[in-house]
Amino acid sequence: MQRKLLSIQIFIYFNLIVKCSTGQDVKTWRSSMNFNDVRNWKNGKIPCSNQKVIFPSETPVAIFMPEVLQVSEMLLPMNGELVFPENAVLKIGGGLEKGQCPNDDAEFIPRMDFWYDPSNWNITSSRAFPKKVSTRNSAVPHAFQIPCPMDEAWFPADTTFRAHVIYPMTRVSKIYIGNKDSYQEYNQDKFDMLIRSDTGKLLFPDFPRFRISESTCTDVTGCECGNEGHEVLPTICKFEVPCPELSCSDPIKVVGHCCPMCAAKITFKYEWSFKMDGLMQMYDKYLTTEKFQQVESFTSKLSTRHIQSIFVDNSPGKQLANEVVLMIFDALETASTTGSNPIGIREPKLDMSTLWNSKDDNYGNYTGTSGMSSGSVAAVIMAIICAILAIAFFIYKKRQIPGFSFARFDLRGEKIELELGTTPHEELEPEESPRSSKSEEKSKAFDNPVYGTNITDEIATSSNEDNLGGKDYVENPMFMIFEDSEKKEKS
Image (cartoon, rainbow, N blue to C red; front, top):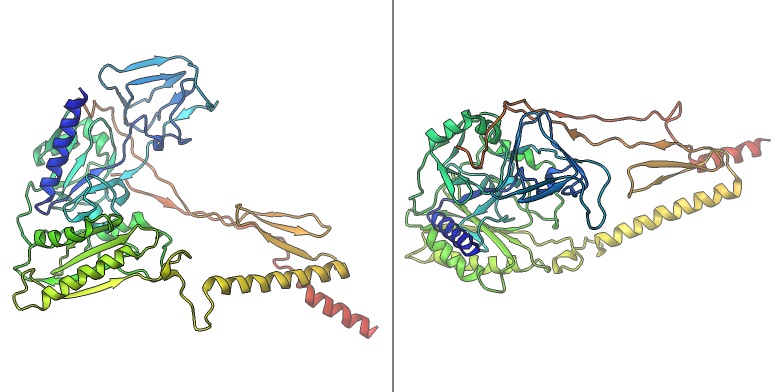
């Protein structure tokens, strides 16, 4: 049985690589509604055998259950389905759990997984390095992480899912949904029937509009995605706010990426003699070597008649990407200046990050005109502040100024606390960050989505402001001393 499953996986992986060699990428859905997915549980842990399991009563979902399950109690949903694999074993009643097990109930919390959220997709592409099947690649811009009109969207077998599609029209080449031992392809007619069924209302609860072209990429220069345009990219970028902190101080802008990137980029214009496979063969000579195996790369054809290649460095020293990019750029520049120009490119341009923030990197020792590093400047400033506070505290202890206070800012906690000398202190709650709240529509009961045949995201922001009383400031002790001395002189 294991050999049979292994042969099926190898066959699927081989087909994915062959399909991608023509310029079409395969985007595989990552999220699931599985029982064994820790992200689906309120406490982030799979239930123990002596816990009570509570499924949502109002949100209809299909939950893929494990082969063997033992729980104390199980509260079933009003509308929903539990999908058990073949020969599954379910035991209801408390069991002996090894190790620590929480005493509270285990609550299943279905997530809101959106089609246009880049974090919900893996990619398989012949234009991505390293050569891996269905994986995350940090060099792939956000626009290309979502299925393009020429791509294939795959939903894995032995899992259930719930994909919210909020865009007016979504275009793909093919859609595959996994069954127990194989994948079933959905053309336009089959998919329209699916989303109208009870099963489809579960898998795609928004009743989305899909256009399945069933076309293949035959352009030797590659196929354009289109997601990087102004029509689709704003929807994608809603899921990438705020942008993450960067490991460099000189990030670059990448077409199709919602945020700046610490990376290297090569762009060039292409002629009609250009062949994407030829470019990938040249990249392969450099990027598949053992030295550059930690460099991730992705190449895409843009609607501006440009080719864009992104290189991201995952090595500790952050130097390998720039090293290999300089080698590749020299080769491209030489090819573009020769008379024959066999690659069919012109006007190659290079842009890369070099100022890394890590103190261990050679590029991280950037200094200003004074010759001091940013860390040294920060240390000097902190020393000055500490000296001022120490002097003020000493004066306070010496003169016993009534009502003088120090503000302690605990960066490790979520509260700011005022400590007064002899007076009671008040706790000040900081302003809360905006949190997203989402509402979902109720759906009818549904059938087995694995073995069988308009939602909106409302964001409410709230902030709490504390009243500090009639006095919204702290007296400066230096001014109080000066005022006290003046009174003594006058007297």
